[in-house]
Length: 438
Image 1 (cartoon, rainbow, N blue to C red):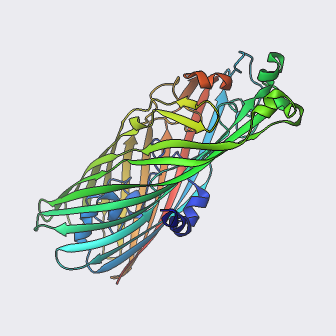
Image 2 (tube, helix red, strand yellow):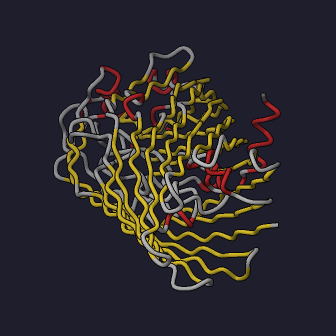
Image 3 (cartoon, one colour):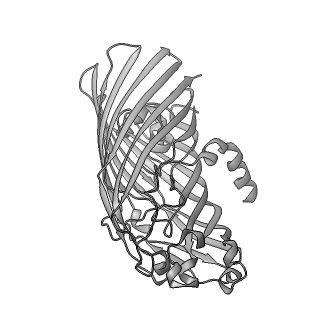
């Protein structure tokens, strides 16, 4: 198992070192795994555009001839702003500090896919992609520093898959996943309040805690693709939850003035762990060719985000630290249009509504300040020749402006005080993809 973890780290080094921004898709989903499907706002699974069908629906492998490979690069450029209303320390004192700056982090992430047709009935493939990722990074003196400074989740998933064409109407597919995850959580500590209530919120007496850990977990996915007619297809796909226990270290930074005190001596570095279940998802999607030039795609995806009900850090020799989240399950709806004017070009456009798992201001968390969002997508494919093509895509994601009024929801959160303010978040995502057929 440790050797597999090392291998995934090496294979996915580009994505693991960069992380990803949470403003692409709801919760901590990365949001897009191919530039081709990105062009129709992720509504094109039933079209089966290329080998990236491994992620969206493994049954789609049955439509790919010969051997094919696709390499993808996504670049996410988020813009996240917080405006303070009235945030307070645990003692009720108004916190001094800034708004945190642009807490989004520009990120570049690659994905890779390959497929091989064994015979008319069976096709195999393998994908290496980033299914989940979130990265927020606030300035050190921001008013919400006692709840979060930096929060980062990084994953990479190795997904071998197989499809079987039952007949001209039905194709089935399945895959296994080995998913590596790495997480970092840091926040400031109001040690001034612990030493003397009059010093509460004094940045000179702020400490810091940082926990890091990683793990590898296993899951599965399966799908079915139904060819209703030459012009119409419908797909079903399911991707399982994956259980992780991130194990690592909890480290403290204590200001020099407090190091000799009982407070300073009590904050010793130790081992820590965090249990995470990445959510399962279920999708229904369709494709219809109206004319030789025009086609339409559609997708509905349900995600079990309610599994993320708390962030519980278990550190050796210390009481558990708990951040209550109470996320809800979510729905996502997307549609797309495809225009093919000639053999060289394909143009795409898409629109999606993506529901947030955070339903109210009292449970919103500053580490992943989420809200309902709309995707506006454009894309194009240029067929260089019969064996080579390039996809380009762009998505603008607009999150609904939201408010946070986060008070302690667990006894261990009391020292973090409250955050009360407004969020404004959006992002632009660019995608580029090269496809080759042998």
